[in-house]
Amino acid sequence: MDGVLIKARDLNRSYRAAREQISVLHGLSLELRSGEAVAVIGPSGSGKSTLLNLLNGLLRPDSGQLQVFGRDQSELTDADWAELRRTRIATLFQDGNLIPTLTVARNIAFRTGLAGLQAHEGDALLEQLDIADTTHRYPDQLSGGQRQRAALACAFAMQPRLILADEPTGSLDQATAKRVSPLFFDAIRERNVGALIVTHNPELARSCDRILELREGALHPWDSAASL
Ligand SMILES: Nc1ncnc2c1ncn2[C@@H]1O[C@H](COP(=O)(O)OP(=O)(O)O)[C@@H](O)[C@H]1O
Ligand SMILES: [Mg+2]
Image 1 (tube, helix red, strand yellow):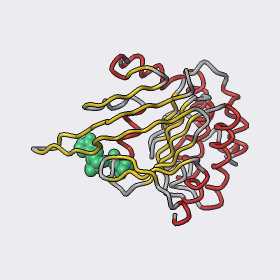
Image 2 (image 1 turned 90 degrees about the vertical axis):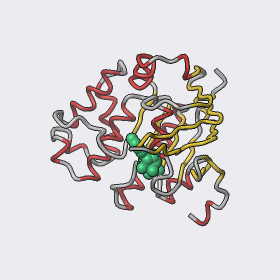
Image 3 (image 1 turned 45 degrees about the vertical axis):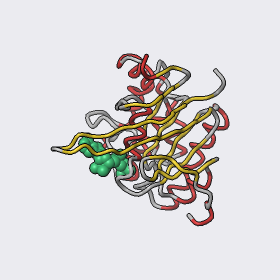
Image 4 (image 1 turned 135 degrees about the horizontal axis):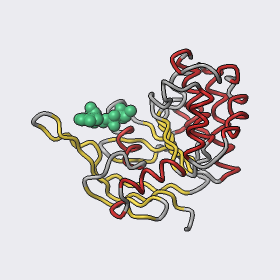
């Protein structure tokens, strides 16, 4: 493989709602390589979450071409996508990342176990994120910001090749959000991970290699990073 993790050409996706068809993504193209972080910005409702869910196989495009890890999505079965999500693709959803009936420690053990790794992969991450004291708590015993950090620890502990993050710093105060950036950029540099990060956090966006704006169903280069 030539390091291209995602290659999308002319993707289209709409939703059927009541009597109308809502076209959300139309003619969207994207290329993401190993070791590259790309920020995606765009207003609420522009299709950012839809895009991430096309890239992790939870949604399928209506038309267009999509390759992940060099494989064409039309050839990937639901089981293939599930395998990719277990071992290679970590998605950080806006909420609902943690299993509510498991403690933080068991959430990490579960996630790493699926990827064939040991649970202690998460220990250093919990320290780094300053939530080592929450490992024996259940998700509903955490603050929003602690939950978000626990979800980050789970995602990174599985050592993914591709990280899809939906507002990973949305519930964090500025000081805590600052602790999160190194997680992404260390993984990207040291393990050659690729990351697509939906974010409104200017600092996180500016730290990425590129910023793309989702507008009118497609991605456009955002060339005024200074104005974020
Ligand atoms: N399951 C669904 N059924 C119908 N419409 C949907 C569904 N999911 C999302 N949409 C619509 O698609 C558009 C894009 O949604 P979304 O991808 O969640 O945007 P964003 O993440 O940028 O806020 C919105 O207009 C939303 O209302
Ligand atoms: Mg969204």
